[in-house]
Amino acid sequence: MFTFLLVLQALIAAALVTVILIQRSEGGGLTGGSPSGLMSARGAADFLTRATAVLATAFILCCIALATLAAMNQRTGKIDASAATPVQSAPAPVAAPTTVPTDPLAAAAGQAAGNGTAPATK
Image (cartoon, rainbow, N blue to C red; front, side, top):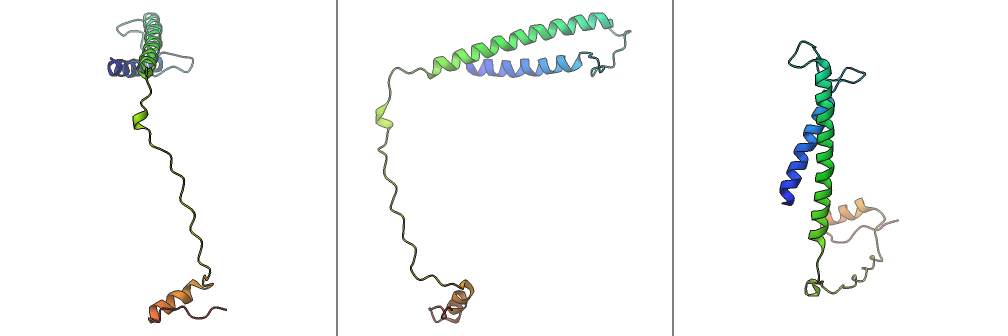
C-alpha cells in the first residue's frame, strides 16, 4: 500500500507541475495560446484552474496518507534487546616513535643504499 501511494504521489506531483507550467500567467506561460484551438482561452483557463485545485488536493491527501502509514509502521510494541551489542571502549592510542628523522629524504636515501639506518640528521 505504501509503495502504491508513493508512486501515485510522484505521478500527481508530475501532473501538478505540468498543469501549473501550462497555465497562462502575466508572463505568458508555456502554451502558445491560440484562441481558435479546441477550447477557448477562457475555457482552458477555467479547466487548468480546476485541474490545479484537484491535483493539489489529491497531493495533500496523499501526503497525509503516506505520513499516517509511515507512523503506523514505525510503532512497535517491544524493544528487541537481543540485537544490541555491548559498547566497547576505544583502544589506547599508540605512542609516536621517539626518534623521528627530520629529513625524510635522507631516511629514504639510507634505505635505498641498503644500510638499513638513516644517515645522521642535523
